[in-house]
Every structure is written in structure tokens, then in C-alpha cells.
Image (cartoon, rainbow, N blue to C red; front, side):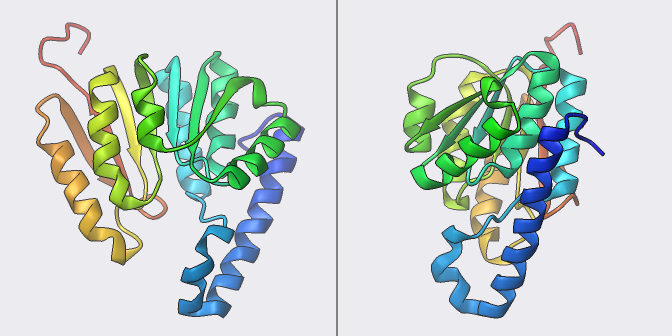
Amino acid sequence: MIFADPRVARVFDRYRDRARDDGDRMKTLGLAGFAVRDEFLLPVGEDAGRFMHSLILARRPARILELGTSYGYSTLFLADAAAQIGALVVTCELADYKQTYAREQLAEAGLDHFVEFRCGDALDCLQDDEGLWDFVLLDIWKELYLPCFEAFYPKLSDEGVIVSDNMIEPEFDRPSVRQYRNAVRCKPDLQSVLLPIGSGIDLTVRWSADNPKL
């Protein structure tokens, strides 16, 4: 199991059960489920979570940004890795009731001290923070990917990493996803690769030919 602390493992088991139950309910509702989509967990999935957890342990970022706390599924993976390396996760979410749920889960897991919760508009969150970001998880409504990228890109540290979710699925988000991916690939100091993990993630690293460490 990826989580050594039994408190974290218990919280993850709860998330796993909820993800399964929410998935079953979505199938039952069909198209009608779109109207109540904010009630569902809609997680990045265990494969993507494990990948990010391992990546953080390997890269050892100091400041981790999560755009889209939702109910805290991915936050749990980020925070557990952050706790092991002494990093901080800053997570932003517009819906206060979602972030309240996430706070409760992270506190029960004993990881809340490694997370700074910010409730509000993602662009306001980015504008109000002057620090550098070493690792970014982008997992909000897809039409916000491009404006958020343009906001945090100047603050992405050298060798900073971006993980962008939902690059392959759902299909109806692909127009917004293509705009985002095109913008990323126009930056000469960014290198990206599309990985078939979960719903598809774009892994992007800030790379400079002038950086002697690379």
C-alpha cells in the first residue's frame, strides 16, 4: 500500500468507497447526472495519484500548488508525499462545502499541517501569491486551464513540474484541452509528454538550455 500511516490509509479507503459508489450512481443517472455533477467525487484516480506521489518524492518540490481541491482525493496523495519531504501544499477551491469536506479528511489523516487551504476563485488565488511554484496539479473546469496556466506560468520555478489531468477523457472537454496543450507547447522552455494514466495526464517540466543543472 502506498500509504504507510494507517490514518491516511483509512481515509483513502473511504475515498475509494465513495468513488465507487459515486461512479455507480452516475451510471444510473446517465445524462441527468451532469446537472448534479458537483455532488460527485470525480477523482484523478489511484493510478494518477500514485504517479504524482512518486514524482513528488523524487523531485522534492518545496511548494506544491493544487488548482481544484474538490473533495480532497488528490490532496491526500499530495499531502502525504509533502509530509515525507517537508513540503507545503497550497490548494485552491471555489466551492466552500467541498473544501470543508477535504479539510475534515486531511485532518483525520493527520496531514492538515502540510496543507494550506484557500477558498475562492483560482485566478484570485494565483494573483495574490507572489511565491514560486515547484509542482502544480491542474484539475479544475477545463475552460479555466488556459487562463490559470497563463497566471502561474511566470511563477513556475526552474525545473518546475505541471501535471494536468483529463487530457484524454472526458471527450466533451477536448476543445478546451487542446487550447491549453497548444499554449503549453508554444513555450520554448517547457517540455511536455502526454501519458495514458487515468483520464490522461500531461506531464510538463520547465527546461532551459541555459540551466547548467540540466
